[in-house]
Image (cartoon, rainbow, N blue to C red; front, side, top):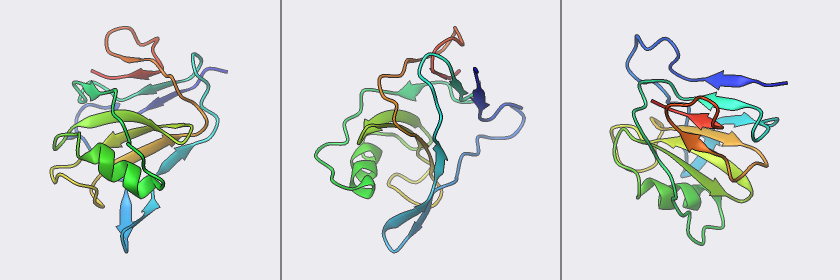
Length: 129
């Protein structure tokens, strides 16, 4: 069935999407959704995310860490982005410090690419604003 995964749904607290843990230069913690269905399920980033950067390129990265470093360099502080890497869609939130660190947020949508992203109509796969 249709599932909606919401972030920041109460709108009362400042944005908090800090689930990344970096240890020894390696990502050791982030959220993973394994059964996301394109056109059926939805991620709702909420009104506190006013826009999302799309069309980012992970370059020729051969590891997730390198892909995230490449993408992070294209995302401003306190901004959110969606990118594709290795057959998955990733939602990345840069904290106030530019560069990948343990204050950032990351969600992996396993095995899905080509998702629709937008604001206004909540019928898109990833909704914000």
